[in-house]
Amino acid sequence: MNISKGIYHTIYHPRLIIIPLIVNVILSSIGILGVYFSFVPFSFHIIDIPFVIPLLNDINTSHKENHWILSSIATIVILLIKSYAFSMYLGSMKCFLEGPDNTYSVLKIAPYYFDRMVIFSITEFIISGFIYLLFHIFWPLAIVTILIVALYSLTPFILVLEDTSVRDAIAKSPRLLLENLGSLLFISLLSLILFLLIANLPIVNKNIAYYVTLLLYCFIGTVMVHAVMDCLHKNIYHFSLPSKKVKKTKKFFLPLWIVALLLPILGALLVSI
Image (cartoon, rainbow, N blue to C red; front, side, top):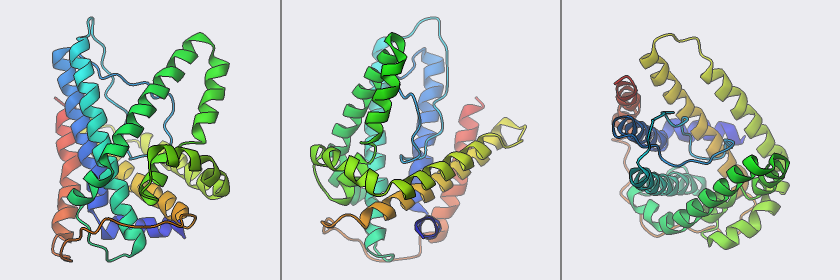
């Protein structure tokens, strides 16, 4: 089953969960800097689709004045970080889909898809901004636009799995989504239920709540993203990997899991400042 494979690879390859953990901690740091320097990164996300890298909601801050230059710089930095992380994240999963003992270096696999993922991220950002404006002009049209855009939500996965261009991935997304609609809806609904349960855990302490929420969110999110990748790759006929491997080793298994368990503590300390 797709989800059972996702659980196996997430546990056996802890670097998968470390990627979203690091990104979440970095985003928390940027949010804290925004509090002190009065800026908020631009964000137009209307809905969260559980097919993307697991990220907690951005820290909401309000300021009497907002430094547009700092906000623009922060937005660009976040876009680049997310694009690099997403390339690393999906690229590593693709390696494991070919074989459980693949030992591709995440630092070598990420640059291979990075430029195309940046193009996708910029396109997504512009479309999100357009939908945001539509909500303030005529919300029914915005809803229709979201439904249309949802047909292309598999674009980054196809981009990595088929090692193709952004344009080609966009063109193939609707067909692959409709062909796998049942499985994707099941993964999406299960993700939504689990994420709602995590968000409503009865934990009073703010630091502990952040730690538990972040760890569970990244673990479950990674399992579900891998399930989507596993579901889609069965429909992909052109399947190739960059010829850059590293020496196979399991000596980092325990240290990586220790890092994964410690990273949320750093995030919890940041949000408590």
